[in-house]
Length: 197
Image (cartoon, rainbow, N blue to C red; front, side, top):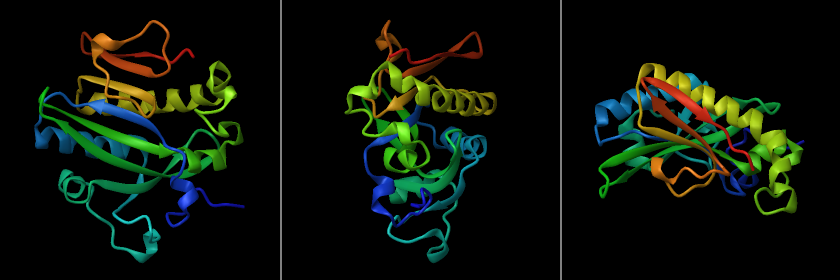
C-alpha cells in the first residue's frame, strides 16, 4: 500500500495539482501573512517544510510565514481531505505586477489524491474526466470552499477559484458552464458557485 503522505515518493507529487487559489487583492505582506496563517488553520495543514526529497522527520520545520514562501518558493505539509485520508500538499504565492495583486495557492497533487480516491485515475486527461468526475470532485470542492469561507471570516480576499491548475481568471471571466468552482464576496459574504462540468 502506497503512503499518500510520503514526501519522498515522487508519484505523490505527479499528475498536476488540484488547487484552491485566493486572489488576495493588493500586494500587502502583512495582510498576506494573515491569509497564510488563516489558510493553514482552516485547512488543518500539518507541518511546513521546504524539501520533498526528505521526509518531515528528516528536516527542520519552517515557520508558516510569507518570508518562508518568498525564500523557498513552495512550502509543503500534509492535510486530511474528505476523500478518505491524508495527502501531501503544498502552498505558494504568485505576485502579478500588472494588476498589483497576490494569489495564495494551496495545492493537492493528483498523484497523492489518486492514492486515497481511485476514481481520480488519469484526471483530467481521461474520458471520465468530464461531468462524471464531479462524483469525487464535488466533495473535495465543497471542502475547499469551506476552507476558503473560514479564511474569509478572518481575512477578506477578492476572489477564489477551485479546480485543476488554472490561469488566474478574473471575476469578469466567470463562464456559464464551469470546469472550476468560484468564490466571490457579495455584500461582505462569500458566495460559492460550484463547478458543473
